[in-house]
Length: 288
Image (tube, rainbow, N blue to C red; front, side, top):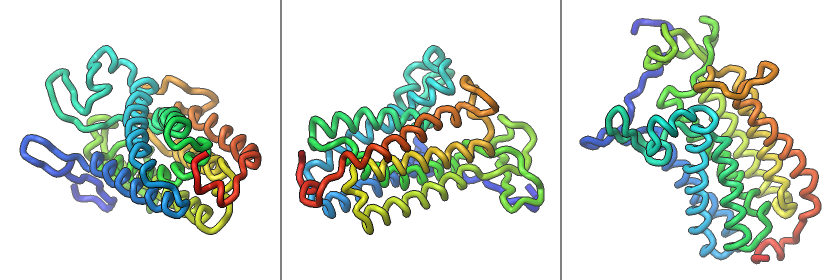
């Protein structure tokens, strides 16, 4: 295509015989791999026994994949429960033909709710610490992981932006999406906007964790994470095309924005109440 605009039309992934390793799946691997290394580093800094790391990784993986997938289907594609039930839970499609698809169609709101539940179990039954202690550290990891997920969306040309003025420095063409959105026109690369926001959030949280005593005020970092992460999502949504059917709309806001508001409010409440959960450095280093 001969054009002055920036064109984003990568290959779908790495082809390994009959199986294609999609870049979106690779970004998930990077997210969890770096997340594991980061959490290992934080457990070392906090003098926590490394035996508690493996179950945290396991429950986080289960919560993220299962919650994100169910969140997408429930909020954006509920008809899939009837049309292709197994594709909701497995990285395949069975109709109209069997095909390995990798995990796609994931919603961050669903992942968040599931992670809250799985982390509650991990906190009370395994590490036996205040759940906010775990959430504070998990939020740092999730912020960076979210950036990789959005990069995966960029590789897949998913969650594309609305049309943008031809003279905008943000004008991107996503020609492979023409079958869904019609004639290819310049659009915002909203996936990159979110990814950059999440990287900046990660840097902020990491600095606060390392350079201040806020990690001893259990819940403070997590509350801040909730406020900023969902604010990023809320404002970038103004530039996005709708994701599937928008089942929840109110006052000009779309489903993603409406679902983000309760999380931001929760973040404020958590930060306010976090002063009730202050611990000392000595208390930080041992299970409760």
